[in-house]
Amino acid sequence: MNLLFAAFAFIFDPANLLGERGILPRLVDHLLYTGLGLAVAFVIGIPLGLLIGHTGKGRNFVIAVTSSFRAIPTFGLLLFIILFTGLGLWPLVVVLAILAVPPLLAGAYSGLESVNRDTVDAARAIGMTEWQILFSVEIPLALPLILGGVRSATLQVIATATIAGYVGLTGLGRFLIEGLALHNYTIALAGAILVAALALAADGLLALVQKLVVPRGVSRGLTRSRSIRPKKPTGFRVMAMAPTKEG
Amino acid sequence: MQWLWDNLDLVVGLSLEHIQLSALPIVIGFIACIPLGWVAHRFRLTRAIQLTLFGILFTIPSLALFVTLPSVLGTKILNPINVVVALAIYAVAIMVRGAADAFDAVPGDVTRSATAVGFSAVSRFWTVEFPLAGPVLLANLRVVSVTTVSLLSVGALVGNGGLGYLFINGYQRDFPTEVMIGIVFTLVIAIVFDQILVGLGRILMPWSRTMASADRAARRAGGSA
Image (cartoon, rainbow over all chains, first blue to last red; front, side, top):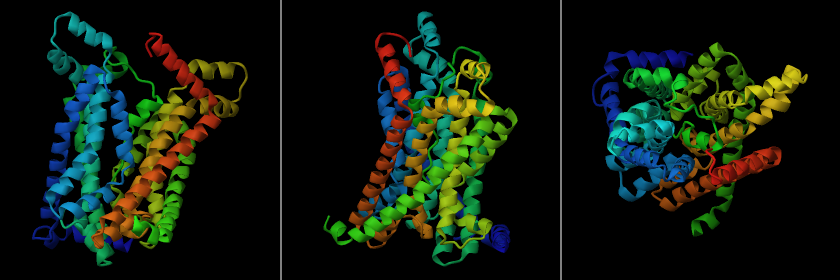
């Protein structure tokens, strides 16, 4: 318990806030890695998921990607890549992106899959083009699940960006790595608390965004309206949609 | 490859450690999810509390949890219990949600029929609800298994990562082969665990296979699945 007090004292000591090894610059770095990794993953995962969800082709591809990526130890993959590329920002960003693609893909795909086909057919029947169907029918109705994927991807990237501290970069994980290396468990614990707090704050924020952005008719209608079919959990759906944990 | 033969003892030893440290949380997750998942399925209020609580715990990054647990449990930082407890927390978090969904998905008609023909609440649970929830529980357990095996390697940073040791050692020695072998062996363990679970599912739930193939046949015949 004394260690816990010491860790909080470290966090709230203004001397540790700024400066090269301060909390604030490391927080900024952590957010930078997270943002870059997510941005790259977003550009790949979301359009692909929407494509598969809209056409209905390639659902086996989704489950193959999500379940096989879950098995790869990210930590090992990052170290392996760095041994070839050398230290730097981009290897980390690539690994973080690899990590974030499956949840984004699964979220976008299963979001569209959950939209009732009758609703899509009705939209087509009244003369909407495929793009209109995608952007004004399918995506709004699928938004809860798409954002669920974004939320899960963000959390994983924040958690895994902790390892950046081990490969010559900083981020909040640096406190953890330094603390462990120097057997200074106060600093390690302070780093752990900071990373956990960041993850929880980001999750809370995204939960709020999820509430605000989703059209009211959708969030309320999830149980009542027929635009979204309530899905029974099947083996396939569980394997594709279960939360992943990599870092 | 030569390196693998020269260090076979090390790799096998680490693999066994990896199997031990990851099997324990998977088993704990499965056992704990049965009562917890049932309570979450049965009572709406506790469901919200349980899912929120485990959601928060699941959000905590693994390395952060490995480092924080010693000061909560009063253990030493290098004690393997920290890693096992952390992974068990994540396993339970995934399984409770999955088990609640699985019990929800058991058709109400079936449970009511069971009550009507005279099953007691306890025997109805074990002979009707639990087996019918089985396939979804198994799917969740497979997710837990693969996640735990992969995540354990991060534990190498606190001295208990099984094959994760090869990642750190290979990285420090600038020797990619060692890291690669660590990754490959981790994948092999994940696949073996998964196949064991699938096999157990086939033996314990022979009906789920016939149901799945009936489902596929119906879909092929043009029915909507």
